[in-house]
Length: 103
Image (cartoon, rainbow, N blue to C red; front, top):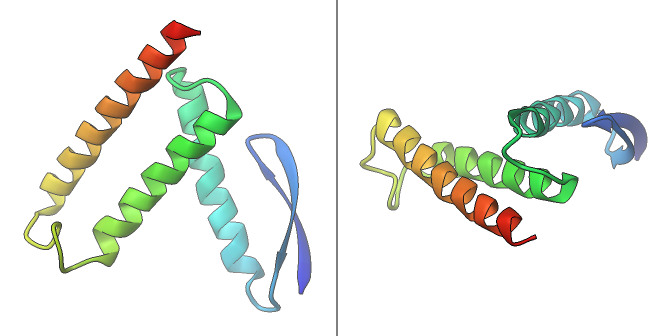
C-alpha cells in the first residue's frame, strides 16, 4: 500500500491505495475537489459535511446514469437524464434552504 497526501477543499488528507493506482486516486480526488469547491463557491450549501453529501449525491447520480443501460434510465436520452438531475438538484436546494431557515 502507498500513502498519498492530497487536499480536498483546502483540507489535507492522507489516503492509502495499491501500487499502480495512484494516478486514478489523484484523478478521483481532483474530480471530487472540483465538485465540492463548485458547491461551496455557489453559496447554496454551507458546511463541509453538507457539501460532501451533495457532491457524493451528484457523483452517484452521474455514475448511475452512465453505468446502468438497463432499468429506469434505459430509455432516457442524455437530455432527459440531465433534466432529471437538475430537478433533483432543485429539490435538494429547496430542502437545504428550508433546513437552513430553521437553524
